[in-house]
Image (tube, rainbow, N blue to C red; front, side, top):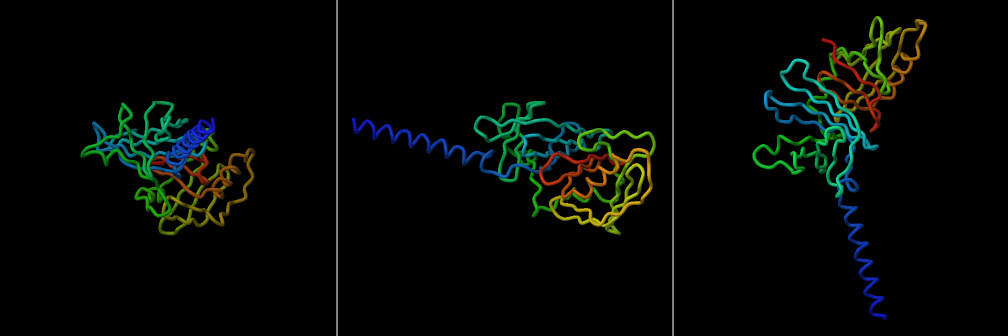
Length: 250
């Protein structure tokens, strides 16, 4: 009886140890997976698909794809993702596409959920934008007029002039319009798509409805990072869902 008890204790201890090890070593539990991942995936009839994937801690995502050299080739998809049973890959609920999660990298998986190998394997990677990574697409935010189209997840509709921002690279300053008042001030742009708008000042005109403008200016003061693909721009605070979204004005 004593031997049986000891064997039972040993078996339970080993089982718990295996369960603990499985949790520790899964990507879901052991990696800092939330963040922005960027890469250019292969395309059958274009030079490539510039892809920006934002994974949020609440398991929501935003996927922006831009088909290079194609008119009206930018698309945005957002929704919820789930984890594979082993905690190694994420699955987008909308289209069931899947990505294996590695250290600062996403591996775009094939239709059967397998990692793509061979000479083209490197072309199916999305790399995480970290504080030590200078995103080559990061400077796309500069010298472009960005029209506000969404604020806190709600569409922005205006009958006359649309709110916008414009970051001037030479002056290191932002100018913009909130729907009633103009705004301006300096900005700080750093590696890893980090940005801050400081000491912003606006004109003091009074208009009938200024709630949206006030929220817009508050968003600018809150922002500390962004995602940009040349045609769309999203402003974020930490790993929260986008505070505001913009489209580039030709």
